[in-house]
Length: 551
Image (cartoon, rainbow, N blue to C red; front, top):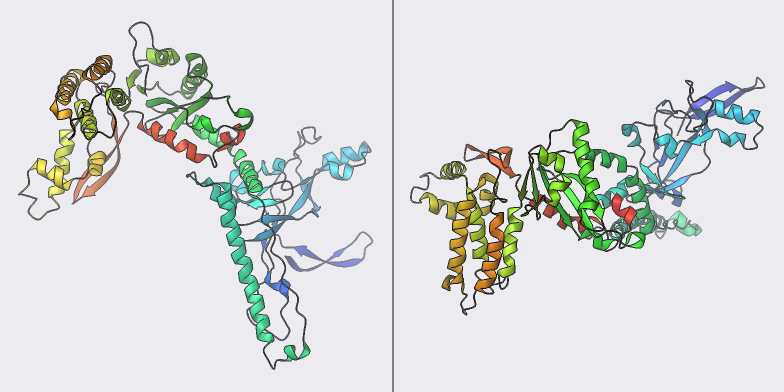
């Protein structure tokens, strides 16, 4: 830790010697544990040493920091904090597989100390002094320098950021109790490895006939393993660390825009609210874009125009301030059209609708409405009916199909000459390949009406019966009622004219032929996936309102 011995002259003019801390590092590592027996018995402390982190942004980086006090006399002057020794308090930090100690330097403000001395304050020695690990000091550093601070400090201890990184995986079952068990296992393994090395060397010394065994030397017992902080403390440290990044996350969300928006709500995540926030929200409404990014979100007690008006006005104002053009298209799951007057969505986004934004109904939500007339989803003809629904609305792009067939044929020596294009598609092309390399287009409201009407009439007959003679539909009247209600939405599920619904994510090479890899921008599927993943992002079955916002 210390450099060469230096000589200096004190206030009395006498020559003194001192050892000064090294100014080129903040991490200090102990010597390696001994691996063999030397001339004397090993000391137990040599096997359980830990590293030291000495936080010195001014002493090492020569950083210029200002006094954090709002009433500092030198606030309007070019006055910076200077080093004023080191703090006597040592923090023990929980690492991923052990512990280490942490010290910090003390920074002082000259104008504050001078003012405090003139006012005769009894605590003038502490009035203008600050610890370098205080949040008011850390906030003055650049993001790159803040990232070099490895600890999230609690009241008495600290937790290394590498431990908290384990909590960032937003998957089901990744709770702080699981992280705590993993860290505890790492601590136990590290401690037992060090203890095993110490006892192994002692056993070598105690072999029969050795000098140490003849003198019956008493050896020092290995130190006890430090108790790991509780899962609750680790969770508290994680929330403290993430709370400092809320403004960064907010900036990322507020800088997200899109030309194709998706508007949808869910109740799944609100059921987990506990504590003071329980019962204060029933709906989580999200607005996403064509890149599966969240543009904005809000928790509301009810899904009404009055409650959703602030989020709509906020997003419209954000687009205006950023100079972004109004979105061209918005997909919703209901409320797309009304016989008289404006719909609720048209009222919320009136400024965009006036700028020719098109509102469309998600086709998959429209198809699910036919489930009300189906007997049950386990019926053998249920999958056939769903496939027929999709086939009446969408059709594959012929140019993409021809290019994919050409690429598949190029992978065979005889170009699969014995197979027709239809047979090749069914035998050699998987559904996943079709999903990513073929674009689909809507067939138009009239074509959809004729095809779906024919499919429904066909499945009303013998084609809709299973092997036991059970029909697919509850009754002919039930399917006719649903079909009559959904006919008015046939125009709402069609793609806007002259607007591409796919973007090229990359260019793939298949058997030497370049094929575009497409990503679909149509519908609310991306938001539906996000809603299904939301409950898994919260560790545990219940969570209070404030921690939920951080998660």
